[in-house]
Every structure is written in structure tokens, then in C-alpha cells.
Length: 305
Image 1 (cartoon, one colour):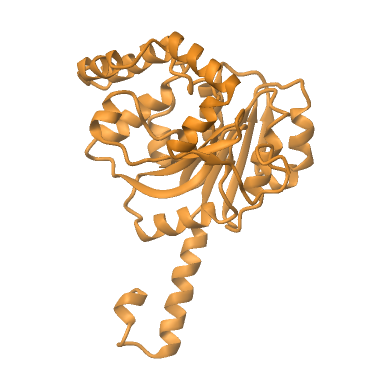
Image 2 (cartoon, helix red, strand yellow; image 1 turned 30 degrees about the horizontal axis):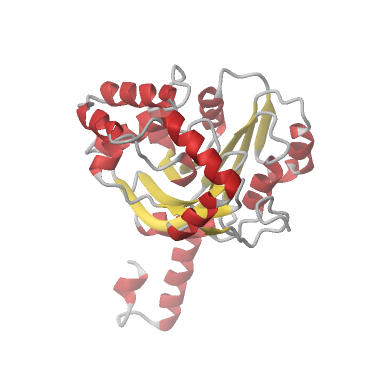
């Protein structure tokens, strides 16, 4: 029996007991947050503080470092009493490190937060946990993220509400917005032969497999620094996207058709640089839904406060 069944049929004391039990179940859902890092001393502390500042208690925080030599470990040791597990050793790239973190995780769901990203607010994980508690059948939850242009200190929501055409054209929820059942991710670990698009390969698998329940929510959970290795639309990324589609048995013609509509990335980058230098880019973005970044985290490198 749950609280809904009890309304109007149970004594008040029993209703309160059921409510307390359901709230306790929410906190019993363990979320493993994994951050992988390498020489990220300039940005890591903001990510760490956003995790340990969550109001949700049942978080397992795991940090995997690739053998940093820039002061990253000083930050890790500063907060190590708040970190469930960490290690520092050479790895074979980001996906090797992400798999390594998964090996140590014991949570019900796995969430990857980049060293240069941070959770949106102290309530981010508790909101996700409440959603997953209400829908325990969900295998993959895709939330939205707030994409941040660090150079211009501007932000815009990157929605998880993609069409099938979007997905087949190379778009997916970034790992900063994905919560995946641990057993599922252990079955489909990141393919370390990829350098950029292993997360896209996994997303395609989750999206296409009818036995995997994937849900989306407009809840915004994190700030996503839009300057990472896979955030720039390079030719290398496109080749890996195509490979991911092929390995998931998807027709790649729609992908090519979508990309043919785009201008040369080289020309786009040159124009973007010129617009950025002249301030035009900022004005364009303000008209396209971007806004000045402002958050509640103290010490935010984007707010500069």
C-alpha cells in the first residue's frame, strides 16, 4: 500500500507512517557521481563543491584522476573526506577513466559530471532522485543541462527533448544530463576505441533498444562547459558519429543529409571568432535565447564573484 491508496481509507497515524516511509525510500536511492579529471586544477574545485553541496544525502562521489601534475590532487585531498573513493594513475583516455570509475561505483544510478562542469543547484540530485523514485522502471533518465559559453559568460538551456531526426543526426543528451541504471552501464561500458563519441554510441543503444526504458525530463540539472573535446563539431567527431550509427545498425544517409545543410566548420569558426572579437556574437546570442550567466554558487568562475 502507498500513500495514494491510503487516502480516505487509513487512520491518520498510518498515513503519516506511509508518507515517512516513502520519503525514506527516496533517500535510499543511491546516486553514484563520477568525475574524471586530468590537470584540471583551474576548474575542478567548482565541480567538487557543487557535488558536496547537494542537499541529497545518499550520494557516492568517485573521482578518477589520470595522473595530474598541476595541483589537481591538492584539490582532491582538500575534499577527500567528502569523496567516497578516488585514485590517481595514468589511463588510456577519458572513456577508460569513465569505465574505471564505474568499476568502483555501487549506486543504483550512475551520473558523470565533468571536471569543468558543475551541478546547477544544491537541489539538483534530490530532484532527480524523487523522479526516479516515482518511476522506478526507468533505466535511463535524460535531463536538460545549461550550456555555458565560458568566454562570454553566457548560458542557454540545452534541452533533452530531441526528435528522432536529431538523434540520428548526431545529437544526444550529454553525459552531464544522463542518469543510467548501474547494471545497464556495466553491460554497455564505454567503447575505449572511440576518442570522442563513445557516449553517443551508448546513447544510440539506449535510445534504439525497445527493452531499455529511456525517459526525458525538462529538469535542468547541471552547467555544461561548452568547450570540451566533443563540443566543437570537428571532422573527427563526425567520423566517430557515423561509426556509432553504423555499429548500431542505423542508416547513415539522414546524418549526411543533415550535415550537408551545414556550412564548413572552418568557415563557421572563422566567422565566429570575428564576431566574438567584435562583440557581435554576444548580441546575436542574446536574441537567440542566450542570457548572462548567473548562479547561486560562491566562487563560480563564470560569475566571477
